[in-house]
Structures are given as structure tokens and as C-alpha cells.
Image (tube, rainbow, N blue to C red; front, side, top):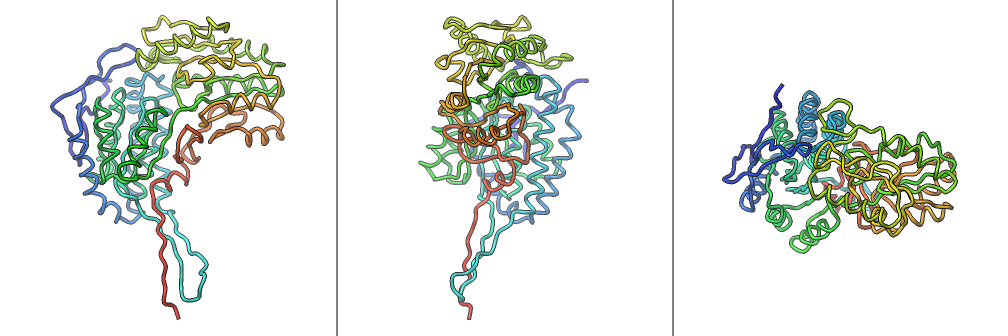
Length: 480
């Protein structure tokens, strides 16, 4: 059955074609999937104006009414999981099963935040004098802007749009040029669900700088959210604060460590390492970028991991049983090749993989590197590919030191059977999220975000809704 999808931008409740269009490619084959509008600053300003005009009516709706519309949006997503999964796989390269998992994961944010909107409570504060009464109320911020990445083309949108709309805000979204079709599919379903015009807008473009400048500097935009690299996030954040002092949320780069202690269940650790490191071919900001293994079990763990990784099936996402799809583009494959070559030249050993895969130009063989040292780039920089570098450590203190020797602090993982160590290491590791004895942790109910140069703010959980609301204090005076 042919896959149907929208190919026009969505602004103010209308599908916009645009004078210029750009091509969207299947990363597995490099075939052109579609052409979508290549909009610019003018159209971005129109989207912001539409969101601004729609804000008062949407904000005035009772939370229960907004929640009902969001529930309808969620229901449509769930009914459409097969198409959404196929679309995510087609433009992003993920295996179908993984892509459908993302679609369900993405839909869950709409459900969660729609429900949480009805529980955005204020509070009463004990007074300091008999003549006054103090309360706080929660209110929407206004027009929100979001720039999202290609590696989770649905979930990274709903993790921002879900709380924004639930809180009573409107939003302008700029999806990545590599994966705009999923964003347009979400707009299509939002329209069917009854989201009013101007509340949810999608601007497709290859001119990220022009669109970003508008979203950062427009006085009509009061909240800005970005997921992407730390370098770009710093520039966008500075532009937001320097122009109009916007509220900002930044989910930036990571360099997640995964620690294997000698007392760990090695089979469980291998399973967790594969789940974390090789999901989406290693192209996630929270994947285990480097794996630290205690000396006593280094050889045993290395062999178990290499054996398991060598069995992973590589190929286009729509093929049955595929575990590892393509990297997103030519630059991504070149980066992985260069980092692995540097490590091998410096003394690392490929226990499995270490080369491109014959499945196609953007496929890389799942790789395990032994004898990696702390100064190698596969330890100090985000790989964003299916490569697992293994580093030895001899003590807990050394492991924690290596784990924390980075400017990033997004996610961290470790495996141990010692409950005392579990608490101790979880508290000592410098990361916004720590997972013990589990390689996958993200869902809609937990606060997702990092510390240090991995970002500002949290997405998901009750904290995620707070990011899109203002707390207003009201003093009632004159009591007798």
C-alpha cells in the first residue's frame, strides 16, 4: 500500500505551497521522497503573527476543553501508528519497529500533557500580616517557538508542542530539513482533531538561520525551545536573551558514559548497552557514547558485547528483522569513519565492525572498539553512530572521574548489584538523568534534561508543563 503524506507547510490553518521547494531524501537509498516548501523569514513572521492572533482564544479555553482536543489528537495518532511509523522510517532511516515505537512514544506526550493541563494548580501562601492574602496562579506564556532535530522527528515535536498547547500557548515549529514530513503529518492530525487555526504552525525550510533569527528575535515570541547541538544552542539562546529576554529551554549535546562494575550481571549489562548504544544506529543524544568497564570483567564483557553486536542486522528500515538502519547523511558517515580510523591508528582494536557496511553508502557496521584511551575522540566527543568504545577502569573513583570528565551532563548509565554503590554513584555522576541497570529510561512521565553544557530546563513530567507556564503572584489586601 502506498504511503500517503502531506508535502505543504501549515500556517494559520492553511496548507502553504511556497514559491521554492526542497527535496527530502530516504537515507537508506538516497532516493527523493518528496519536495516541500522552502520558506523564509517572511513566512516565519506570518506564522508567528498567526500564533499571536490565535493565542487569546486558545488561552481562554478551560483546561478541560483543551485537554479534550488534545485527547482527540492523541487518539488520531494512535489510530495512525502504522503510517506514522512507516513515515519516520522512510525519512529518518529507523527500522520500522523502532519507528513505530517512537510514534507511540511521541503520542504519549500529547496524552500526558493534555491530562496534566487540568492539574496546573496554583497555591495559597500563609500570610505575613492579617490584612493580606497571598495566592499564585499559573498562566500560559504566549507564542512559543520550537526548533527540533531529525533523530526523533515525532517525539521531539510532541515533547514541546504537547506542554505548550496544554498550558494554553500557541506554537510555531521549524522541523529539520531532513525529516519535515512527520511534522506535517502531525499538523494534519492536529487539524482533524480540532486544534484551531494558528495554534499549531509548521514552517519548512532549508534556511534555518533566517527562520531561527525570526523565532529568536520576534517580540511576539515569548518562549523558545531548541533540541540540537550545544554550539548552535548557545548561539540561539544568546539571541533569545539578548533580543527580548525570552524564556528558553535547551536540550543540547551529550557524552553519556555507561559504567560496568565487576559485580554487574554481565548479560543484563550487554543487553542494556546494546539498547542504549545502538538504538537509531547510535544517533541519539542520550545513547551510551563511551562504555567504561572495570578491569576484572573487561575481557569477559568485551567478548560478550562483541558477540552480540556482530549479530545485529544492518539494512534499510523497511526490511524485516533489521536492527541498524542508515546514518542520516553523508556527513554523518564521514564523521564516524574518521573517528574510528583515528582510534584505530592510536592503538584501539576493533573487536567487531570498524568499517562501512555494504548495505549502502550511509550504512556503518556496528562496531566495538577495545583498548580505547581517555584522550581519543571517541571518548571526548559525541560519536552519533553505531560505535561502542570500551575503556578500562580499576576503581569506582576512577570510573566516576572518567564519567565526569566532560563539559556535558545529559545522561549516564551504570550496572551493579550493590545497592550502596547504586545510590553512591547515582549521586556522584554529573548528569541530569541516571539509569541504573537499564539501558532505556525515557518516557512521557519523567523530567528529561541535562546539566552543565547539555542544556537548560526539563521536558516531560510535571516539570515539562512548568516550562510553558508563568507563575503569577496575587496579593489581596485590605482585609479587616
